[in-house]
Length: 495
Image 1 (cartoon, one colour):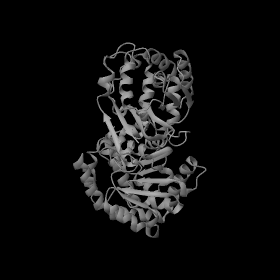
Image 2 (cartoon, helix red, strand yellow):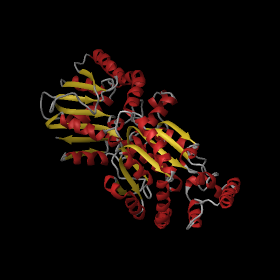
Image 3 (cartoon, helix red, strand yellow):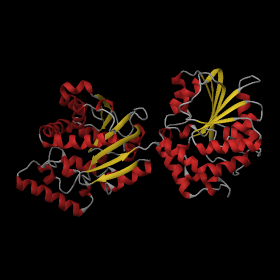
Image 4 (cartoon, helix red, strand yellow):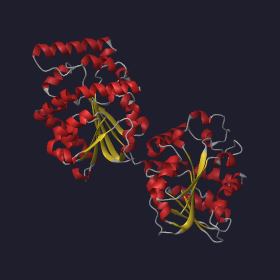
C-alpha cells in the first residue's frame, strides 16, 4: 500500500495544474454558489449559535483549494490539508489575498498529526475513493472532530465501471453523450489511463457506496449518519450532470456524539450488576492484592486525604477508608454514587461520595495527599485535561496512582475461556456491543498506552512517572469472576 500511496502522490502532483484550472472554472460559474449554499446550510444547522469565525473547519484533501477558499471567503476558520506540495502551491495561488487566513498543512488524511478534537467540521471532496486505507481516514476524522462536530464527505463510485460491465456501458454512454452535445467532459483528460491503473488497486473501487461508508461510520461511533445520493443535482452544473451521469456524487453526513453522556448512561445501566460484583469483591482475597499495589506508594503520613476518581460503587474508597484514611469518592454517574453510599453503609465505612466530572473537579488546588483511579482514563473524552485537573488538586509531594488498561486494543480472543459468572458472560450481548461502541468513540482508544499517558504527563511538567506493566499478574492470580482479561498497568505520578 505504501507503493500505491507514492504512486497516487506522483499522479496528483502531475495533475495539480489541470485540477487547479478546473477549480478556477468552478469559482467562476454557478457551482461556486451551489457549493457555498449546501456547505453553509449544514454547518449553520449544526452550530446555530456560532459565528463562522468561531467554527474550525478541516478541508481534508483540499487539492487546489476550492472548498477551503469558499469557506474562508464566508468567514470560517479553515485548515487545508493535502498530501502533495504541488496541490498546496496551487491552492495558495488560487486563494490570493485569502491565503494568509487559511492554515496550510502538508500531510496524510489517513493519519494526520492534528491533536484530538481539533475541529468542529471535517469536509472532504473526491478524496476517499482513491485512498489505500479509507477506513483509517474516517477514524482519524472522528478523532480530530470535537464533540458534536460534523463530517461532510462528498464522493462517488468514480471507477466502479472498471469492475462492473453494466457500469462500463453506462460510463461509455456518458462519453458519447458529452461528445454529441459538444460539452466539456470531466472524465477525459491528461493521464486518465494512468488513473484507471491506480483505481483498480484501491479498495473502494470494489465497494457499494455510500452503503459501505454509512455502515463504517456507525461502527466507528458516529451518529445521525445519513447519505444524500441526490446531492449532485444541487451542486453540479449542466455539463457535469451529463458527463458524469453514471457516477453521481453522493454526500455522507455524520455527527460525533457527546461520548461523555453515552458513558454516563451506559454505566448507569450497568450499576446494579456492578454493585453486586463489588459487594462480593470487597470480601475476596483480591482486595488485599489491590491494597498491596496502593499502600507502598502512598505518602509517608499517618493522616492522608485521598480522592478516589471514578469510584463506581465505592470499592477503593471503602477499602482505604477501612484503614483509617479520609477518603472522598467521585463519579459522574448518579446511580453509581447511590450504590456507593449504600455499599459504604453496609460496610460501616466513613467515606463520602460526590457526583462530579473527573475532567472538571470542584475542589481547591492542593486538596489531596493522594489520588487513586481505576479503569477511568480510558472512558474520558479529554484525558489530558483530566490529568491537569488531577495534578491541580494534588498536594506537593502527593501521589497519583492510575490503574488502567489499553482497552482500545482489546481483541475478542482475550474474552475466551472466562468463567460462567464473569461479567462478559453475564452481561447481555447488547451491553457488550455498547461498550465496544464507546471504546471506538474515544480518542484515547487510538493511542499507544501507557506511553501516551507518560508523554502527556511529561508535557504537563511532571518529572517523576513510573509504570508497572506487571500489575495484572500481581492482582489477577485466578481466572475468576473478578479477572480482567485485558492486561492492566499502573502509573505512579509524584508531584
